[in-house]
Structure formats: structure tokens, C-alpha cells
Length: 402
Ligand SMILES: NC(=O)c1ccc[n+]([C@@H]2O[C@H](COP(=O)([O-])OP(=O)(O)OC[C@H]3O[C@@H](n4cnc5c(N)ncnc54)[C@H](OP(=O)(O)O)[C@@H]3O)[C@@H](O)[C@H]2O)c1
Image 1 (cartoon, rainbow, N blue to C red):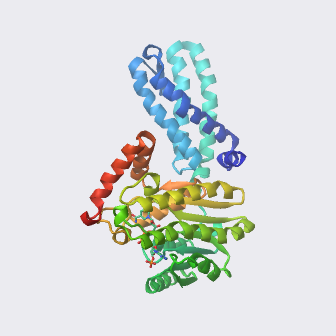
Image 2 (spheres, rainbow, N blue to C red):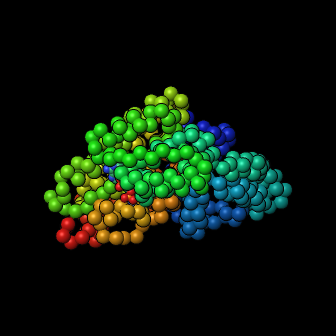
Image 3 (cartoon, rainbow, N blue to C red):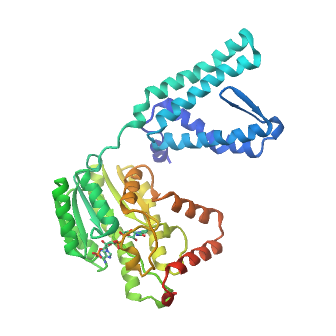
């Protein structure tokens, strides 16, 4: 709990933390009460010094709710737009506080009351303006944050390639591993030429029971700052039609390999007091997924494993993140035996992961996946969610495998 509180309030001046606490109270308690429970006849809302009452007040409360919600998000996640947005909004409140008593009481009393009410907000406006660099500050590069070397599994295709490219752009040397050697060599050459980094290619099958340990042994001489547990595959179809040996491989690659690799790599990161571990989970790990039953279970495993680790590692300075992509344009669908369907760009998905690393335990790669998973799992009943997922998977699975 104390780690969580420390993480929540670190790196922000006290007055900004106070504003964040106030906005949280408004967004999660006061505004819902104001909008849904407060009687219409007694409702009042002020915008730009103009007083709204009754149903107009209810209507004008909605943008207020949005503003407080956005403020909590912007302050908590240090979004670049927050410096200007907070300055403009608190400035608007200061003007409103000045104008409203003048309109209401008129004469000298209104001016005095207005000035008294406006001063704290005017000071806050100036404070946000002076602190705008706090929000504008660029994220430090991955190399600066975590160290010189990264290990990327599943680097022969799709997300793994994009992870390696993004790391190389930040000057991080990469160990690239997968089974297809020529793909790894090609990527290594590209990264060395374009970004001047060092690479090491390791051709290895993570489905073999000693695969993860052999991989960890092969990088023992390197100070790994970043581990990207990305290798994985899906296997679509009705459970009894699937090959048991391939299902065992799936669990080995998707679940066992990240556990063993992370277990081997993390002690050195903790000893150094910094490091990053990303696990590529999936939006499929958020709900039961008929016709992808073992795959979705494997990704639920990754999610809970990674999120638990996120807390355990916080005190040691190691950032853990579970990336949960929805459909992404890689070789995944073909390997899983799914019918082709549209997906996100892998480079965009990796960008989301790097932005969220160090800020939260898991991240959905798109708003659509986030909405779908949250609406389904929070509002829907388990049978409803399972049947809806079955319907989606039926469309994506060839007839003979359903
Ligand atoms: N694309 C999507 O729609 C999607 C959605 C959600 C989650 N994901 C997850 O994203 C991760 C990356 O997948 P992707 O979309 O980039 O698919 P991909 O293009 O098929 O890449 C999968 C990578 O995993 C490697 N791999 C598979 N089996 C392996 C094994 N036995 N040993 C070593 N490496 C192995 C592959 O390399 P080799 O074949 O050369 O060994 C390849 O580099 C996976 O964990 C996947 O579950 C993907």
C-alpha cells in the first residue's frame, strides 16, 4: 500500500498532488452525485461566470465531469496537453469567480467578494503556467532509463521486430531470438546499419523444455536492462480438434518461457536497481474465448503473472508491464489458423507499450480493445461474455475447425 501511495504521489509538487486529489474527489464522488442524485430544482452550475440552474445546470455539469476526469488522467499520467489545459481551465475559473459575484451582488461588495474568490485560482493558473515544462518533459530514452542491452524473444516477425526497431532507435543493443535464423540475421543487419547498435542473434526453440534456460545461459555475459517476453502463438479451433502436442508447446512458449526467463534475468536487474520486463499478453486474456480456449487461458496467465510481478518489483526499481494487443497485423492469424481480419499496426502497439512502461501494470493497445474488454467483463455476465466471444471467434475460424 505504501509503495502504491509513493508511486501515486511521486515526482509532482505538493500543490499539484492536492489538485489531483481534489479532482479525483470531484470526478468519482461529487459529480456523479451532482448529476444523478441532486434534485433538478436545487441544481446550479457556473461556467465563465454565468450561472445555470435546473436542467441547464444538469446539462452543463456533464462537461465539468469530463474536465475533472481528464484532469485526474492528465495529472496522474503527466500528459503533455495537461500544462496548457490546466492553465486555461483554472484561468477560466478565476475569471468566473471574479465575474459571478459582480453579476450577482453588483457594486463594490460584488467586486470585493469576486476579487477575494478569484485570487487563489489566479495563483493556481500562474502555478500551472510556470510548471508547464513538468508536463512537456520528453520521456528519457529506453537506454537512459534501463541500460544498454535488451533481450527480445519472437524477434523474427511482427511485434518482436517492432520492439527491436524501437529499442534500436533509442540506442539499445539487442539480443534477438526466435527459430528462423535468416530473419534474425536480416533484422540484426538492418538495426546495426541504421542505428549503429550491437546485436546478437540466438536461434532457439522456446517450446523445448530447456529452451528458456538455454537462452538465459546464452546471455549470462550481458548486463540485460530490458527483457521483452514477446514470443508466442495462438491455436484456433474446437478444443477436441486441436493437437495436444501443439497445445503443450503453446503453454510452454506463452507461459513457461516468460516465467523462467524473467526468473533468470530479474535478480541482476534488482541488484542494479533498474530494469524493465515487458510481457506480451493479449486482449484475449481478459475473457473466456471459445475456439481459442487454451490461448486465451495462456494470456490470462500472462496478465495475472505480470501484474502481480509489477507490485513485487516496484520497490526494486524494476518496471513490469503486460502489453495486451487486440488484433494486430502480424503473422499471428496465419500461424494460429484464423481467417484473415483487420488489425492494428504493430509499430503503434509497441509505442503504446513504451509509453505505459513504468506507469501502470498492464496496457491495452487500443481504445477499442479497452472498451470492449471493460464493457464485456464489468457489465456483462460470464455466460453472456463467453457466448459473445464465441460468436466473434466463429467468424474468424475456418468451418472445419469449429
Ligand atoms: N497479432 C495479434 O493479433 C496479437 C494479438 C494479441 C497478442 N499477440 C501476441 O503478440 C506476441 C507476438 O506475436 P505476433 O503478433 O508478433 O505474431 P508473429 O508475427 O507470429 O510472431 C510470433 C513470434 O514468436 C516467435 N515464436 C513462436 N513460437 C516460438 C517458439 N517455439 N520458439 C521461439 N520463438 C517462437 C516467432 O518466431 P519463429 O517462428 O521464427 O520461431 C515469431 O518471432 C505473441 O505473444 C502473441 O500471442 C498478438
